[in-house]
Length: 349
Image (spheres, rainbow, N blue to C red):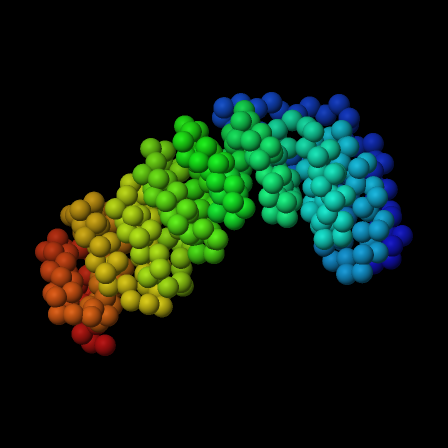
């Protein structure tokens, strides 16, 4: 793209009179009813131009576009509209690889604003990207997020506290979340721990945090932690046996079950032990409901039949195969949906 077009976009991002400098920003409330700043921003001239500039910087292979934009970061981040600032964060993130110190300085100016801005997607991603390169800077901003009156910002604070502990050797922030009584913080941290379990630098810490989240009194926190069942799809499950066993034995089991069964189906290693533990828990929780087609447990029972047949084939001993047959008998006695068909299909195969 010709550089004069980049300059024209930059001029639009800096100079248009729309939106109004007196733009009203919703206040924080306990119902998390904050406005979507990014959506509002990209529907303004300055915000749309800023987002386009960010896209251009992402594909700036020789730094020529960044040479025009980086010197103006200070003016871009001083925009009086939160909507536009939510878009400017995209420019900053794209500029990190060209001039990290300049971006770090501009970010400080960007977030001198009401907390609602911290909940906007580009802003939160930019914050994490900057912290990743300079972990010591994680503390002050994360503390601000965790203490925010805005629910969405506290949730993001939890999302930042988790990698700070697992990757940046700053465990205090996650410990604060675990010890506190804020469900939004715990929900944010639980989701990140679940998704990063397979590639974190501190799997033991992630495991211990997840065990806490599996038993959390808040349903949404347990749901976030249960995402670990899907995050392990296609992975060897042996290294994560402790975490999966804790999930099966927890209050998050019912939420995790559908994804857990699919993950067992796609596991490249043996799952007979985990499968047996899972099915026993299924029977304890659902029992006769597994035969009731009006209940979701019936659909899960259909998958369980096939899983047990696979586990029987994988079982390393006669004792394990006997245990699996006992569980299959219990399911058949209950009339659990799809189990008889799974056994019949295996016989024909």
